[in-house]
Length: 329
Image (cartoon, rainbow, N blue to C red):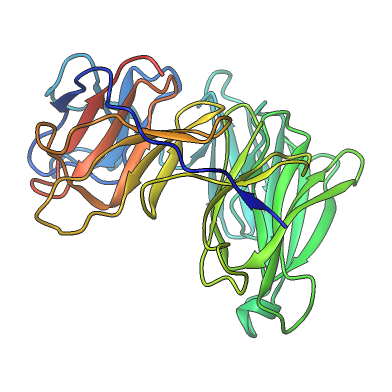
């Protein structure tokens, strides 16, 4: 049975973070960083004559007029050179660096690139019946569709993403029909070996750390006293640990061993607060002061820069994109 680590007293934040407004006019939602972290990207149509496309703003020069970055809205490879769009059952790919194009029959399902950009994965899920009993076939192929194979079938779940080695994927499934318990496991797609990590009710919010050392998730309404909360496990299944955090809340990885964490606030009139959680030593510390760095995130719309040094979010007050600049993690 997983054990809870002793509670540690948080220490004050070491420096004052900086809040910056990046966009104006209520623009935009679901922002994300460019691979190098120098731009914040989003879908927009800034005026009637402009195309609906991917636009971006420079994080070092806010607020600035958004510039057109990609005129094709689709699913892009990690380096953003290859883009896929759907055409019926086909995923149509274009390598924008070379102009090469090709199609892969994914049954109308969006492809997910491996971290090295050399493979694609897609899920074919049953469309009828109770969700907990629906089966999901997980397929894998080379980037250009060669060597397509069904790697596994899960019930009442699916894939939760690639690990950075492009060999392993995370899975959630219900092993026993009719039971609420789910199993989180890691599948090596090259060997077929599957490692079970945890089994509990309502495993949600699964995110794999950037280096693949940890998987974070939360459990709600567990039948086991003390099991509801936020947890981490290593992909080998040898460490499963409940995190020492100030309250339940939202999180994203800052780096391979630390989470950015935003606890639920007591009132909508108070500011949110950003914390860092070191999952190795299981310690939490605040990064922002709610009395001096006042912010409120709209609809959980926030993400962390690739280098972990900043956070972007949609401000619930003006619906613009803002950035919180932080010290090095």
